[in-house]
Image (cartoon, rainbow, N blue to C red; front, side, top):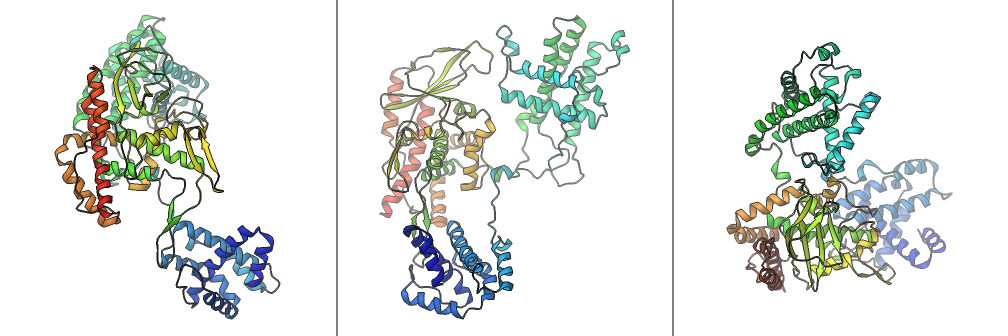
Length: 630
């Protein structure tokens, strides 16, 4: 053991050698040798007597026992409930010591082989990976095997059709407000639906590959003689297309395997029906658009199909209101105060160093290693997204994903923007307050987009004396911290660490904007699942807030119950009897009064006041609990 210490101290710089040797001693004296009979050290640090006792114990220990060292260490980890990051450090220290032993001439060959096998990660000490939010099954129904038409089975003519269809979906048509282009992500969803339907036509309707075409969406038969003789009239053709649509929907309703469970048979969400019918209508519109310059028969045929499919859609729409989801609500739903608590947990991660538990008998916590700037930046971004959903009335994902930072001051009166603007909302600062302008008109085909809502961003106060604007401005404007060497580092806002090439508030780590709504939702979904084990989404948050507003009278009662439960589970420092009251929210009130004095027609002051006041009241309850504990 003394020879290994000498090796460490002669090959490493002094500071690193001291740290490495301390880890080796702890790995052996505290987390390995006690499994074989050495008394467990009593204090946080090894005494000289305990160290010498351990050396004597090692001298008497047969070398063969080292082959069981990792298993012995893992058992003590579990017994002493050692933190995960500490386990990694001490596994590495033990592994380094054993590898050094293997290189020594006195180490027996037969033991060496066995130990080398044990140096590899064994099943007993593999970390159990927690499932991610992406792996959460919200329903007991089995997913179908992929059935979309693969690229290898698409003819050149079909591929050209798909490319034209994709272009049709996204190209702007200023002179035709009824056929406005969609965004690339929506076009991708339509294409996926089209490929599934084509795959079903080939695999289950036995349509030959050479006959697979988008024309199958608007024409029942490809028989050239029938087409020339016009035996299929437009109305009869439309009725045939509706039959094909109904056959596809019925196939979707039928489970692949019988009696998978009590809920899997004959279940189909009307939302799926709507998606399928909408896709069919869009393809029919594509053919209508393509054939307007050709002979009139094709135009009439497409118009008849569109009309028939719209009738099918009208028949499905009423079922949307009464549909009961088959997903497990316990995996997604939460109360509003639980979401506010989640936002606080996200704020708690906006630090340069995490607290981690110690392994001494006195327990306690210590500061972990310095986090990288990008890690800190991502924590800030997650918190800000949660805060913008909690402190103002929760907006649609698209509004926050396209929230642009503006360093010029827009007017506070209704104003119009040309259609060329690709953003839906603006975040800007006016004197000492931050504001959001939310635009509409992006979905109704209008030439202009008008200001729909204008609201202030409330500057909520936190128990330790900080406020929300500090976090927002540290993300956007200026952030200071000390690195691992104690050197002060200043950056022009944590957002700049990702080197964004756009003006949106939220950014991907590679500097690109969030073009995919699914990827943007994961910015909240992943940390929320890690902290609450709930796979939440923007829609869940919006429904939760809406439900809270409907049940406003129960808020204080429910929150007090929640805080008592939280205190009993986590010993969070909040007293179960902490009084809760409605916050005066003076900064919020002043901002609202200022807006009301300007008589903004597009601003609902009560809605914005409510969200901020509820969030501040929740924080005030936490403050009161902390003050009582003090």
